[in-house]
Length: 504
Image 1 (cartoon, one colour):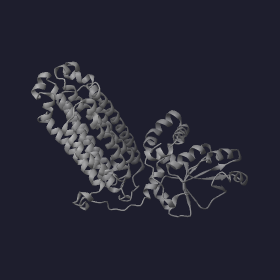
Image 2 (image 1 turned 45 degrees about the vertical axis):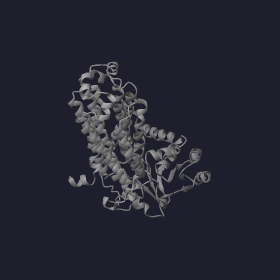
Image 3 (image 1 turned 135 degrees about the vertical axis):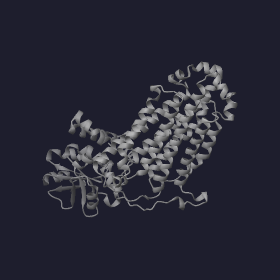
Image 4 (image 1 turned 180 degrees about the vertical axis):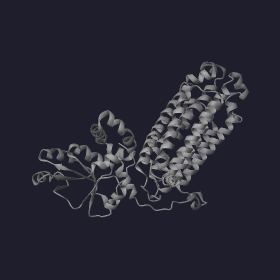
């Protein structure tokens, strides 16, 4: 399991199940997932596990007791270990080790209690040791600097004791591998972008898409607070703002609440895309491009909601037509080699663990936003209104439909479009939390802070302004805002390290 669930939930699991049972249960659960077809590859992909350097293969890993040998070998190979030492193996444990070593993905070394056991294991594992081995360095504490120093000697095998992984968390291998990843700073700057668009890098196109979303969101807000309806809106509805007031005196405010909330979400998406492009793709983070791609693949197709609604908004189409080619150019290729400064690991462990709680909250918030977007899209494409909407309007859907047959499709477009954009936002937030939580990545904190402020401030302000304050209606906004604020507070020192340390 990832560190952001392991560390925050470990005290609770230990209290409920007992420490040993919780450890074994987590190990077996992950082993079961890896044992599924494609499970190991999926876990490496989902949790962005880095490949160890070629010179570490076969000499960087961990020690596991015989009691968990099968699950230990299977799990550690996925986490980044290239060698697993098992032992000490007694005579009655030989068959257990032989069975666990079948189909292994990493080098397996068995430490036998005597020569007879060693002879029985010789054909089942890659190496058998009897007695002491001088070419081994056993790490007993999760000090990344010491691990890197030991691995500099190509003659030794560096193995983490079980206590290291229990204390630090399963992502320890990934952190060591990333600390050794060669970098090539400095990252490109805006001054290096040529004037000719044919030479613009992918990250710059991504930056333009993000800026375009922010500008479009601001434009939508200005229109909503100004004329409310554009000429094509009036043509479709066959009426103007005054006509809507005559149908229902809350209707214009209801349209404004939908559109301002949508505008805030567009600005939030823009903040996320700007951050992913500038802070991630520009410096060679392949995961940032993947997060950007998946979010866009969810967001842009929601334009076709009109097929089920019947109303096509020209401005929405125009924005999508302009931004989609830029989006394609932004994700057309994987980022180049890493261009960030060498990572530092001087952050105190309590600061990192607080940040892991924040990471868990961010991932959970992103997943919640996705669910919320799916629900809102479904409502927009079917019933259009939720009960609190009709209470605020003081009417029902049939009465509105009878007053103007185009009114419900018009409202449904805003509602469903907001839901689709919310799904894209949730995907970006969840993946940014899942993959971007690294010490000193200040851009991750500022990106999430900007997106959270834009989305939450717009939603809360417009609801309060029009007095649509039904608690059950705003509960998801209150809850999501509280989660984001708590997550950002808990992770600030870690993500802004060492700037936060210097400030203190």
